[in-house]
Image (tube, rainbow, N blue to C red; front, side, top):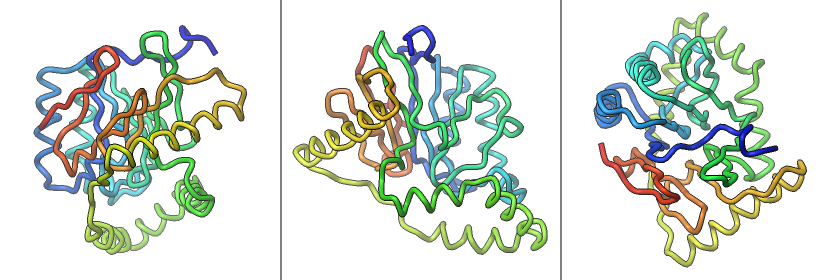
Length: 246
């Protein structure tokens, strides 16, 4: 795998993760309107952008249409990448035709930044075998097809029940001391390095992921903040991240 064969992260690129959008939330919509007016070179949506979005389900698409339209509008202004999370999946090119979509099966994904290899992912990978089995079944084509049929037969009733339960679950920031975060970061980097070695890929110099709602970095490990918790995302510039608020 060579540097020139990898997609490139450009200086000034904007990363947003874990906004957990629910229909009616204004903060994320306001931010995207700003980005559409003054677009960065790239925007990376790093998963759990929606609090619940299953692309195969008509009721879910209808409920989230405003945000989908803004993402599509942004994709006409700059390069947009979308990494599926554990709250938003089953997304295809029909819904976001100009967006480069990375389902969980393609994560982590190799990118290049200033001649260095980075791995990007939502972040809910390399966890327990139980969780991995659960999420693989939930996001499988078979399960998505069943959910679509149930939604159509119930005229959206089943989806409304599921969404109400999920919306009631609290979303919290994961607070770690600097010492604990350093330990956490080293552990995550080790897991990504094992993945690289397992498939005989070239070594990596950095990792960017969301999911954990932390918003810190250690060396070249970037744990993105939750937009839902902090109302901010990150811009990567010359190897460093800086905050940007909605």
